[in-house]
Every structure is written in structure tokens, then in C-alpha cells.
Image (cartoon, rainbow, N blue to C red):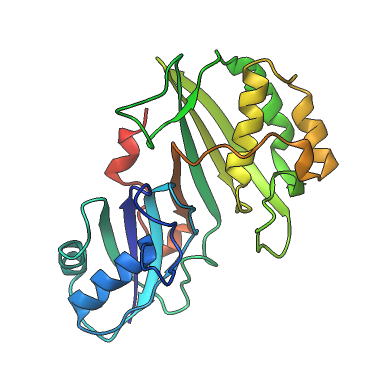
Length: 260
């Protein structure tokens, strides 16, 4: 029996998603909770691995099990063994050919930034920090150069394991509410650090350090050294993947309404 579940988490306390010998990852905590509840070893595959400090709103995983329990039991039972900053949001049976990673037709990220002369305190880790005023129109003009299918090597980390740097960005939307900025990304898939590197470039344009046309030049260069330094993970949220409607999986969770 194959099950899919949606997971939300704060990433600050963990060394990213992927299992490590330390056991201090979101995957390690989830698999411990699932295995304890099911009383059998369970291994999961996720839609998108997140870095240390990155949060998840609707991370989707699948796993196989011989244990037959109702979906709500998997949610409540697994959550009993998870720490307070990780929670299963939903669980649903899926066809055996469903794959949380390969079946996804797109993925979404959101970056939340606070524009302020002083660093965040209450929002520490939950929002990035920019101390210079940003120009929304300049950033949106710059972002237009990235829409479509491109080679994103200029925004790819040296540790990236993707077989190809060619990805398709479907949308980048930039909004402001009070002191908070939100940059939403929708793409077929993302390279390692791609969202953080693009965000740092957009901030450079927004604060006037670079012109709107500069981002197109960075993209065309395919050279990581031409882009801005990688933005810290604070304030980055993996909103989650989305799938063909035939799978019938939820693409929203309550946590999504919490973002500004």
C-alpha cells in the first residue's frame, strides 16, 4: 500500500531535509515517527529536499507500508511522535505508480523579507532581513528576464546534483505588506540554492546596487560568479509541489494563510 502525506515544519532546528548520520533532519524525525506509529521500518521519498533553516508548508512524501489504517489515524498517530515544529497535515492513499518527486509537475517557494533598519527578533529565522528600501517595480522588471525555460547555471550552487541546469520558471510575483516583502516562485523544478541566489540578485536590483537589466546579463553569463552572494535561508518557505488533478492531492494547507 502506498500513501502520500503533506508535512509542514520550521527548518531552524534541523540540518535540512535529507537524512544524515546525526539524525538531526526533518526526514529522520518523520521516519522515526512513522516507524514508531506503524511498528515497522518506514522510509520516505519527498517532493523537494530543503536546506538547513528552510521551512516547509506542504512538503509531500510517499511511502509504502503493509499497515492498514485510516488516513486520519496516520495523521494523528504520527503527529504524536513528532516534535512541535513538525506536523503531518494530511494523508491519502495513492496509486503504486505515484512518486512524490517524479510525479510533481511543478514546485513553489516563497521568500518573506522584512525591510527594516534593524534586524528581526520575533521573526528571526522566519523572515529574511533587508535594511535598504526596495523598489518593487525595478525588481519585477528584472524578474521578467527569468520567466520561461533557461539555463540557470548562474544561480546554481557548486554542490548541486541536478543532471541539467535547464529549468522552467513559470512565475515570479513580488508583493509588499507593511514592512514585509514576499517573493513567490513557481517553476518546473529548482536547482540547489537557485531561489536564494535569485532572491539576492533581486534584492541587489531593488536597493539600487544593480540595474533591472543586470539580471538578464547574469542569466546569459551562465557563470555563478556573476550573480550576488547566496541569500541566507531565513524566511524561505517551500510552499510545496503540485500534481495532476487525477491524483487528488491537497495543494493548500492552513499554514499558507499565515504568510504575509
